[in-house]
Amino acid sequence: MDAIERLKQVVARLLRAAGGAGGEGGGWSTPASNGADESANGGAPPVLTCQEALERLYEFLDGELPSQEMELVEAHFHVCSRCYPVLQFESAFLEVLERVRGRETCPSELRSRLMSTLEAEGLKE
Amino acid sequence: MTNPTDPDGLFNQEAIPQMDAVYRFALRLSGAPAEAEDLVQETYLRAWRAWEQYTPGTSCKSWLFTICRNVYLRRSERSQRHDEIVRQETPNDARSISAQVDVFQGYQNSDPEGDFFASLVDDDVLRAVDDLPVEFREAVVLSDVEGLPYLEVANVLGIPVGTVKSRIFRGRKLLQKALYDYALEMGYLSKPASQG
Image (cartoon, rainbow over all chains, first blue to last red; front, side):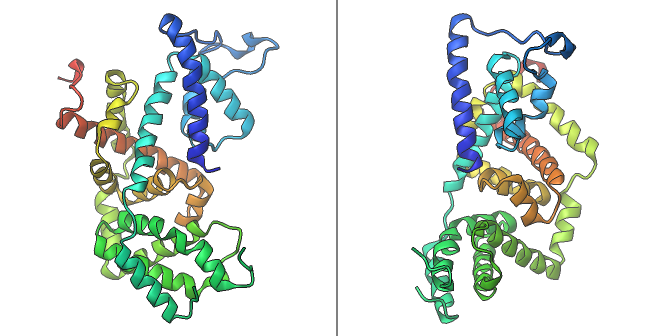
């Protein structure tokens, strides 16, 4: 699976989660640890601050973080109404770039010419 | 099923299907269809002649991109265009990039979900990509248009992964700003009150 497919799955999951939370009150809660001392988190699983999550945003969207970090970042975006719009914005941007991928294809004349050249160079179909 | 000892079969199976991707990359590098066609032609010729150097199981697409870029750079060096392009277009001053990126904060507020991106037509997006300085353009195209992971982008460009991340970050921010400015100019977005 390439990075774009992974991104689509993660963002779809987040959008579904946000749809549920946002529909009830126009927002959702931010973890108490955001911007605060994480030691206050006690024995609970680690959570990221907004800054830490946003610093990892592109690597998260590109599927380039280790799986544990992916989960931490995803968990942050699930519950942070301040960071979630940034995720939406960046996802919309990357979708446009993915969209243009199909816009340009190798001209058929070039393809034919190239195949002829390669066959002249010994390539067998 | 292709016989791994059959170079023709492997080339047909792995390299030929990448022709669209190589053409797109060549087009983004050169900015001109005729030159892109020459680049694709030379890339595939070189790839076929050096096919025994390709390692089956690795990314053939990245391997072809590497060859294509090397051909492009060699040609550009001959015409002394590449260095000029890099010197003239790349805002090496980090403050210059930061200043441009700071503008980005404003439109996140005016269109927090980035809906305006969907209103842009593909040609506008591609034009903005083509206007990026070459070092950012390469990174953004390989990562965001062609979907290569950072490590493969690093291999194609011959730079460390950390530099790839940095170029992708800066390239995306510059591109977002260009697209935002264009959307404002075309009336896809209304100018935020704070800016005007």
